[in-house]
Length: 137
Image (cartoon, rainbow, N blue to C red; front, top):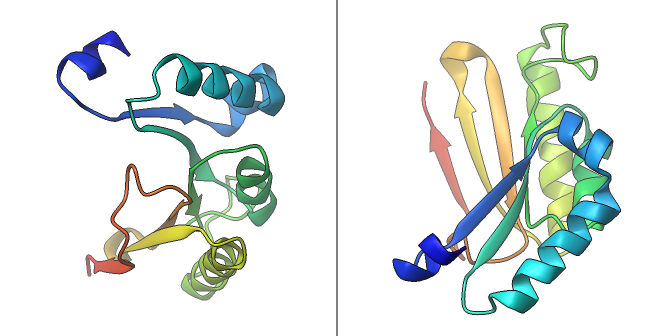
């Protein structure tokens, strides 16, 4: 945080599904609250990386994550390759969920890898206020 303050930079703290399972969402939320109180001048983002299903993204948002990425290239087991249609459908549902709670979002489609990611941002510290789509086909 001191380094970010020294160069007037925001901070992104990323948590994987595995990190969330052993650290606990409540503990992570309280740590972020403490950092925000200690360093109110630094924009801070808590990011869920590679959500494997809607519930992963939903619980992240419920516990104060300011950004989530839904990776629909694999099914919920995170092992089985998903169809393009599944990918589009689940990504759309995560974006709809974000809209429902007033979250910001950005979607990137990587067609060559048959994957998509929805980065859903509730705060504007790390994302543009404008909605955007990036197509990498």
